[in-house]
Length: 183
Image (cartoon, rainbow, N blue to C red; front, side, top):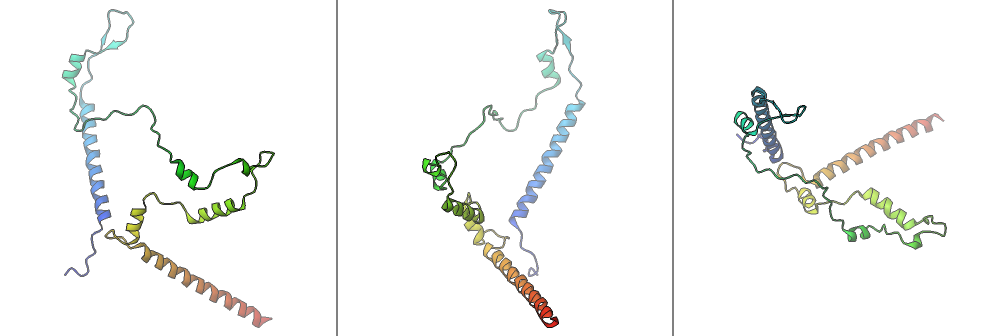
């Protein structure tokens, strides 16, 4: 009977597949490393043109002794310069962090700005905005098989909070009644 079988979790299945793939790649790396260690070192020759020159290797002998393995994937060149992202100026302006001369007094010190302080406090408790709202909506609706919907998790947390507040209230009420009866 399939009544008591647990539904397969696609995320853990994918994680398991990736772990197996990583293990296979590590085994391949170890085998290639052992082949490299077993190969005899190429012959080294000293340049006779310059008496104390550095040791050189002949390219033809080097290729016959240690043939290069053909890469499975074409290698992409690594970028030498750092890659910078475009900064959206409209998004920065929407945060309300624009400093104008009216925000500073004659000594150059920033004036006390109560609305900005309240906005920063509210944003601090609200938390960061999401980068992918569509994914958050999908997760909240319970669209991923194997994960509980976010509304269910919120309900469980809310009920747990109400339960502990009720226990704390009853404990405090009991302590107060004990002190009132003794005095």
